[in-house]
Length: 92
Picture 1 (cartoon, rainbow, N blue to C red):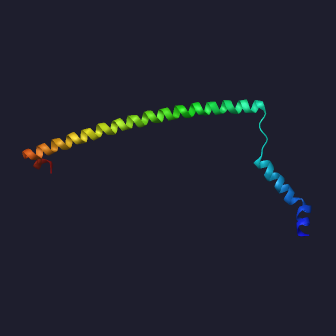
Picture 2: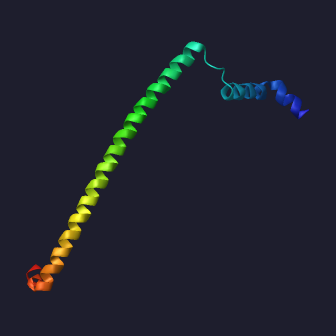
Picture 3: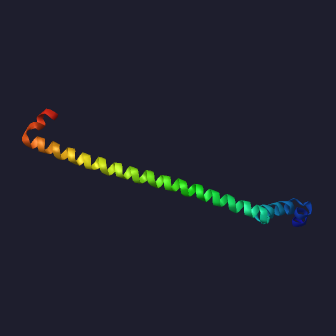
């Protein structure tokens, strides 16, 4: 009896139909599909451009890190040489 009352009210059926409509939307017409495809292609081009810019920035930052690391290595070597000569006392 309870099941009949539940379905007789129509609320469950309406909720089920609303759920099915939200899950299984019809395919867009051809015009909408063409527009959607064009939009996706445009978005892809924009993303490819952003990725290229990001890659260039990463490459530049890697070069800067390498240069600074080499410079710090040279400075540490020079400090070691100065300390070995006895001039390191002035840098304390």
